[in-house]
Image (cartoon, rainbow, N blue to C red; front, top):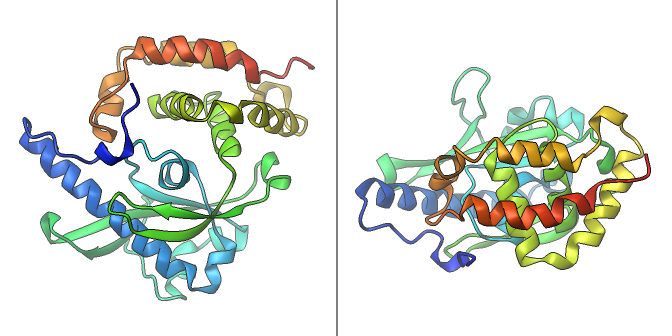
Amino acid sequence: MITPYTNLFQPETNVGSAISRRIGQRQKNQLKARFLKLLSATPLYDQLILRSGSALHGVYLHERYTEDLDFFAPPVIAEDFPAAFQSIGLCLEKRGEGITPVYVAPGLAQGRVEIGVDVLAASYPEESFLVPEPHLFRAVSGEMAPVRTYPLPALLARKLRYMMWRRYAVDFYDLWIGLEKRPEVAPEMSEIVRQRESGVAFHERYRADTARMGLDALEASWHEELAALMPRVPEFGQVKQALAHWLPQFENIER
């Protein structure tokens, strides 16, 4: 059974640390909406594309917590994005050398709330043919903010590419929950993968058997990796069975 978004941040009253964590996550989620709303009134809005879990669950799926706000941008902005944000009055603090900068606001949790902000240069093949669309980011509190992001099939298709070079339980969870909730997007996902792979080297292409091996390697750590992101983690076997159906459908047979 899929956990409804309305219950995502309800405290787990039997564990005190879980209560504190969920309160902090809720405050961060609200701060994301406020940050994005401020951003939407600046010239930088048209240069940024919300990506990754920030877009998947803030705009489309609403099923799990995400830590940061992630964007794509032109290389000139991505090269020094803290300066770009500072130029529009959204100042970021350094969280450490080489670590994602943060945007900070007063909050109940330890007196402040912070969200990481990361910007990458748009440089992958699919970004040459995909067009970002205007959408609304929705916080669990109901606050909303305009954003630009890619269509849901494109965000899910990117998860397939991630599966080729990293083993994160969250990638498989996101693909599973996306296809469980929106199975009608699968044909468009397949077409995006086909177009993308026409412009990449053979060894970079999506392979269903590689994805399945990556998923199998996560069985022991599945619950531990996902437990902080949602109150009820789906059983590994349930996800594996569903993805056994879906993963082969996106492989480009014409090689």
